[in-house]
Length: 99
Image 1 (cartoon, helix red, strand yellow):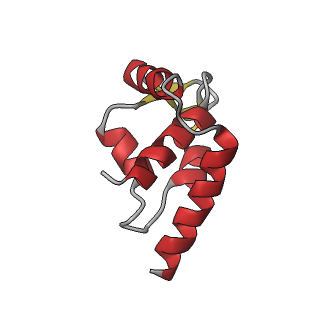
Image 2: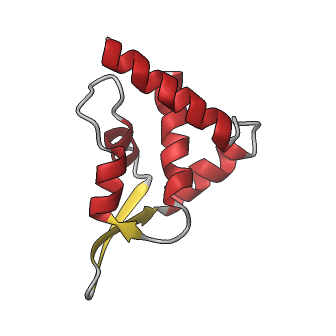
């Protein structure tokens, strides 16, 4: 897996945070049709995201225990800060779009 996708997965996990978010909100922000940036798909495939249903809130997603552990482990090992990851994310998206 590319370093760019790894950085973006960390960004996704950090963005999701400790509280469940609406499924539609997360997909709107993170799903991409670009095969070079399968961030949402890879995070799901690796078991980092848990899905829930809540009365009156519908579908929710949150970090799974594996996702929380992955984020904790990689953030503590000198992973880039959120701001630097955001810059890298924008650059990666720009490169993928250009193609």
